[in-house]
Image (cartoon, rainbow, N blue to C red; front, side):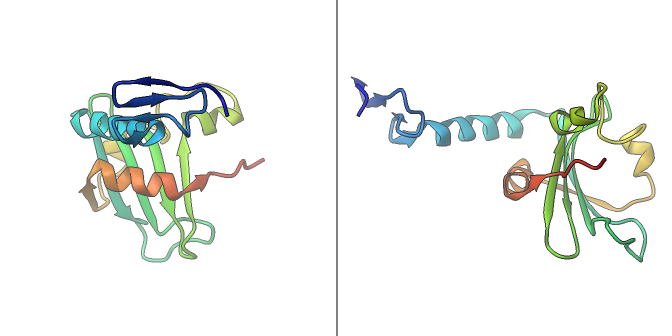
Length: 141
């Protein structure tokens, strides 16, 4: 066991999984802070919509979920839900596997791309929950 220092009600350890701050694990505390930031960030909006065509082409998701910076009209992260129940997430770091730099995960303006689609606004917590349950989008060669 590694040495620990007790500070007030906090127990600090070199192992983040064992670090406790005011009764919360360190990782849980970081997740709570991250979610609070997302809820208060007025530039981020979360949209959920069905595939825009009645027939879903093979290999395409049935439900598309986007995290959008409404100030820049850029998609920052996505979750795709497929007919078989699979959830895949995407972000800039995953897209960087293909090389290049990105400002959005969709080509062009999100508003223009989705002008004819029906989307619902969802809460940040719902997006984050689905994002955490998702697997990374596989690399396509």
